[in-house]
Length: 180
Ligand SMILES: [Ca+2]
Ligand SMILES: [Ca+2]
Ligand SMILES: [Ca+2]
Ligand SMILES: [Ca+2]
Image (cartoon, rainbow, N blue to C red; front, side):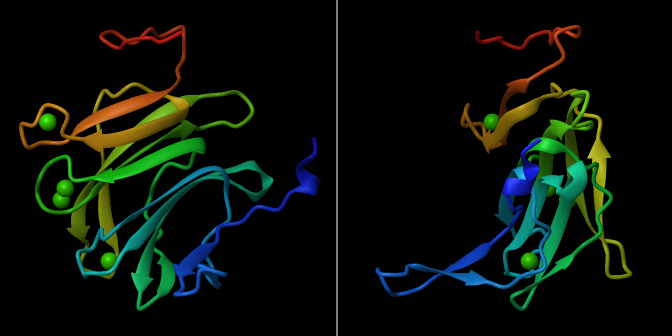
């Protein structure tokens, strides 16, 4: 294990009007992760970008978090998302109700390889400062070490999903195309 040679970080960089140093590191408390994924979206529709983070935090802790942007400071929402390593995530308003929903793929168990895919529907504020992300029984293929991307590939004005990654070969995915 060579973990000691590497640090785990998550840096936010702001653009600066200098070509010599085009980005400047921003101090944040956002959890450092590896085998990770990050994505911006204004999940609470208050006109600032918030951040979703997933991956392997220190000591191999599978992690998935949403950080709310409070005037440039980031506050962990404490959303009850299932933590994953070797993860990928993407925001997309799949139900077209005007708020971004979140899909997260990854590994539930960094030692044994348990791929999972979770789709969370953004159900708005809970009335006490928190936010509701409801797990949806989507039937989407469970993958780890993958990638996800939303896009309206058939131009029918709803979001479709591309997903790739490692899946459990004992559970062949019907209807999915395997690329070898
Ligand atoms: Ca926001
Ligand atoms: Ca939505
Ligand atoms: Ca919603
Ligand atoms: Ca579509």
